[in-house]
Length: 102
Image 1 (tube, rainbow, N blue to C red):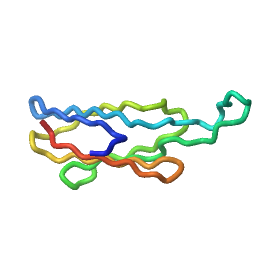
Image 2 (cartoon, rainbow, N blue to C red):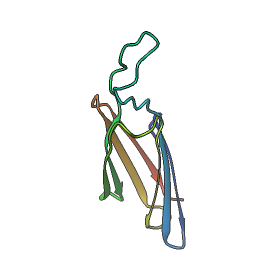
Image 3 (cartoon, rainbow, N blue to C red):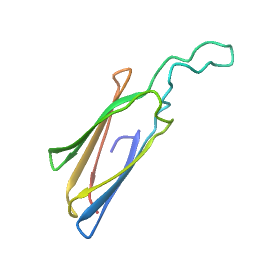
Image 4 (cartoon, rainbow, N blue to C red):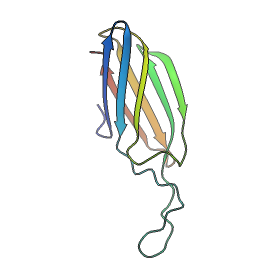
């Protein structure tokens, strides 16, 4: 699992609830530092989620997403399914993690 993403997925009655937090500053590029200089933009841009190797969803994000964003989503699945997530920021840095549904 990535050091930048914490994720858990639990199944109940055929529905899986996945929760994940990405450790990321998500700077919009409009905030100024203590010296009055603009802090460069650095935010999570895109994300993909796969279930057992098949695409589950794609995300298009922008500079308005908060620092250390939290995502929660539900889908049909079962215990033992493999859930993988991958996010790319505006500096093209990739963060990825995977989890087995509990």
